[in-house]
Figure 1 (tube, helix red, strand yellow):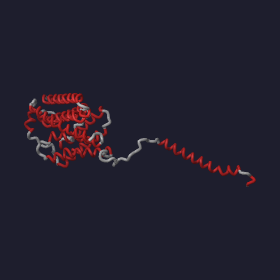
Figure 2: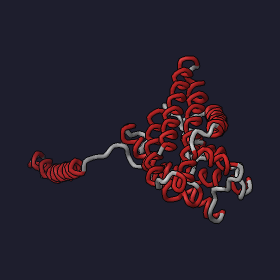
Figure 3: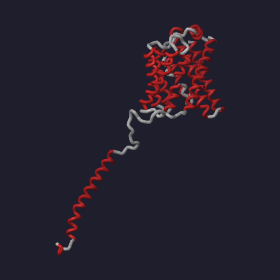
Figure 4: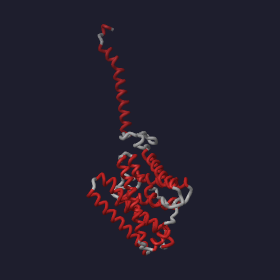
Length: 311
């Protein structure tokens, strides 16, 4: 368990350093530069380093440390709760940044800056984690260094099935994200963490369940066993397709591309109570009846007022 304790201390250190980086950047940079660059860079750095260490525990822990997947899944849930509360609005995920662009919540320049910052943060996270592993503070790190040069692809199924799995994970993740986007963080953060944990447990044996193109690029693209185009199809095209499907299902349209709602009819914003409508119709009928009775009585009253001699 000593190796597990070192990894937990590493998680705390990573979160603390990235939080300090966010606070310093917020003081030195403008709000626009902080939101598009520094915040995404710090979030991607934190996510990449944490996930790499956690993946190492998932691969080596069961036979090298004697703990089962329940420990790793518990750590995964807690880490994503911490990420959700400390990211300060950063997504650290290209598909979320593209989704914000398609929803007209972000400009093209801001989206491009976020994608560049996410790529830089993931690259820095991979390099720093490799440096940390080279110190071999635990037996886990020693074993990781031995097998690092011969890492294999995370795709353990047919290519089309792997792309479908990543797309499905992205679909459900973005659907939950869209549904909870206006919710209080107290409910949103644990719900998203539980969704990520469940999807990782379900789809992990097939593709690693990244559904984050930047994280997958930094984690598994350098491993042998699959071509670069295979990785692109599974870890980029699959999650992007899942995000688009979730957006169309939730919104009925893609505001950046077209405004027409393909799935849902536009309903009136204001609803008239049924009782009020009924009363209004009955009142109109009574007024029409009184008007008809009045018009029928007018000829007789006119005859009564005429001169009898004229008759």
